[in-house]
Image: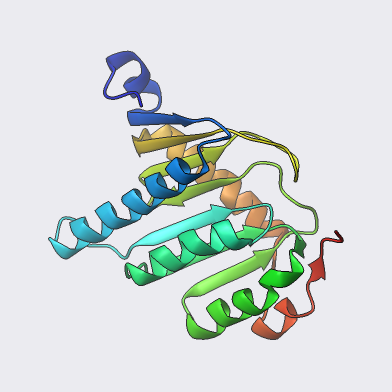
Length: 181
């Protein structure tokens, strides 16, 4: 973890964490920690706007579902997920359940699987995965209190993806294409 450094902080943010591909647990707990920190700030009145999470994922798989459920359990009021067109068949029912029980959650499908995956937490923190294909190992970077220009770059990319993404209904997730093993 890289703490405050005037040179990198000026370009990226206050705290930069680099994760290797084998650090799956650390990546997950870092995102959990960001969600919990934002919830605590909201509870103390230091954040007045609604808590928001935007995610671009290759597929809405078990790992992404865990992060989304954690955000739901910590009272995030706006969650938008943009995903590729295919999912793992075993995830269909879980995705359907999540969408059925949480009306503030938007799940959109792109015609092609995105290669750039990232999460924007409350327009303040970023989690960015190294560009990769479906089955490749990958590293990631977490940035707390990311610089405004960096957040804006990822927000603009998210808005561009929204132009091509199709909203999906709860029912249509049960008919979504699956990966063939």
